Image (cartoon, rainbow, N blue to C red):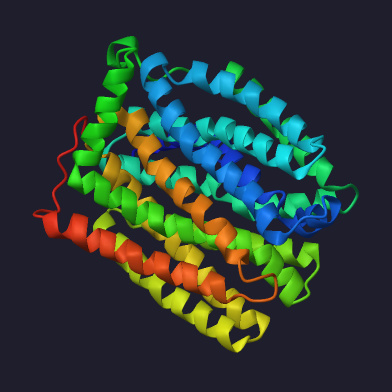
Length: 406
């Protein structure tokens, strides 16, 4: 990426990164309010975690829909409509009279937020390929990874002077800002001659082609299973840190947010060294790092070790996610120029669908044990390694990339 183009790439990454942060903010900003929501609706930890599950399902299903629509109608129009829906659903969450409706509106909110994630990545593939895509995607992740860092701190700040309702009002304001950005700052990157036909059967065939591509399927499952482990961490740590270790919502937000730093470190290592070390090498390294860190988390959970002995391996586990996600995305997208929206959607849907399954499982043994968290992230790390070696590594014949538009 030349110096001239680098300045433009940084500006574009900042803009697209803002849309990518909508997902992390939607997921993470209300985490410090989990205990308060339990009391407000006289509910349980698992049921409140199910509101997170609903959001993750919305984010997953929404990416399939919005990714396909962006291949048909371009990038801007679906994003504009989604931002309007996001604002409305955020306000609906704020004024939900019961837990059931909160769960429903969280699904809609997640569905709308998915557009920011999948379309920003499709735009990246519209404009870049090869090593340039890897470098640009690492820039994009610098901004989007600030979401997990800032969101819980912002949520804790809001809770310091208002209730959980204020968190969703703040999300509605964020959505309003992004709606304005979509209208006035984002240009269309998918020309009419590169758009897919407005044919539902064609879209299904596109997904079928992607699922029959063993390399793509392997990268998708490897990345998706790894990120599902993060959602177990996201769902479990509000109760583990606050109920088991007795930290305040502010301290929880700082501990949780520190892992946004580890995400950034992991993604930037890949981006800055992409010209020296292959993405596949980084992917393998990240997978083994995650496995070792998850073993340490489970051991600490079983013996109920001090807080710092849990925080440190979780830091490295999340850093491994930054490494594997940054490496796997360009490898999977390289040969998908004509189906960038659908491919980005497939890469996005699996983490959220799997995350929706594991999120409520973390609290299934109650609010006073971290063992389920350790078990789930260990299983996710081991499963991701199996997916890579069974589907990708066994078919790998050459490190040379054959992407188009080089």
